[in-house]
Image (cartoon, rainbow, N blue to C red; front, side, top):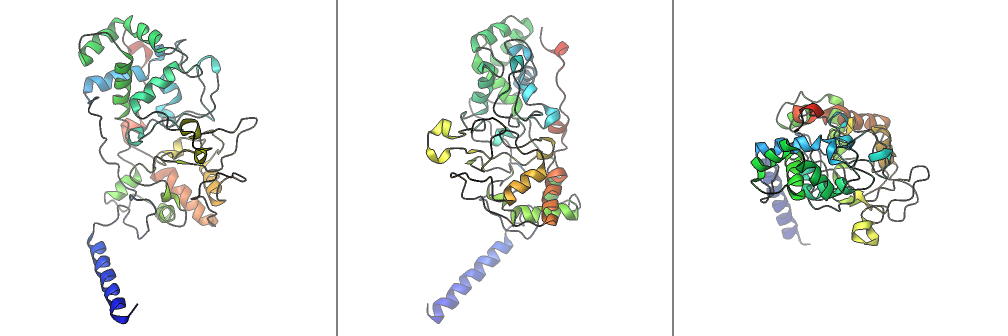
Length: 354
């Protein structure tokens, strides 16, 4: 490269630097690089599908159905059984328990902020919240019912018949309507307020110095935002982290069961980091018990001896202090305080339609 070209390149880079400096400050207002294509920050408004618009009546109906155990075969399991507001909209794990005490092979992903995920379930087999809502009802381990039997149950409850008529108009109650109502309710369960969110909006005192350090590590040395990016703190994609089976558990094929692509063997959807502190244990099978365990797994570069380990996994070389900062960020700064997420109360059975 001749001297003129080199000087021209420097000038272009300088202009680009000025332009970047004139851009709004990164949402974190910290001098950190961003690994993912979207900076972490506040969540954008939820996008509602055109064929399922939000209405107050539909959301309330969805909330009733969400907490109603009568949708299950033996009247013991509701959506909230495995997606409990008091447990970070998941469950106590390590994996979820359905009718007759049957234990599933995976723990329940959180419902909170699921509206931002392009695909649902750990393996992404459902393309929408509506399709996801249909699955557990007829899963023999989860709610153990059939769609037809569930609709008959709802049709025998006069209160529900009237509400469905008011929300959807005259006509028989359908599985699609049940799923649309539940999905409408789930789209209201959104993290709009946490210490981190207040920090992004300009309250620089909402994070402690240790949490601010954790945020720098999250976006930098910790390599976290390579997959946990954007307001959702997730890329919505599928990665193999080398998570080991628990006890006699057989290896889980993960995303491969859906795509049949060998590259997807053992890959699972990136969970959001929001509210992680109230959602232990971690990973699809609950194999990591604490946030410290999670950081240690990533610090090692993932689980051992997995030929399909994601290329983004690498040893990090975190110090004890850096680990403490990362954990501090997740323990408080990313925990929601808005009532619709943090303090949602179940509808008592006595107050459900009769």
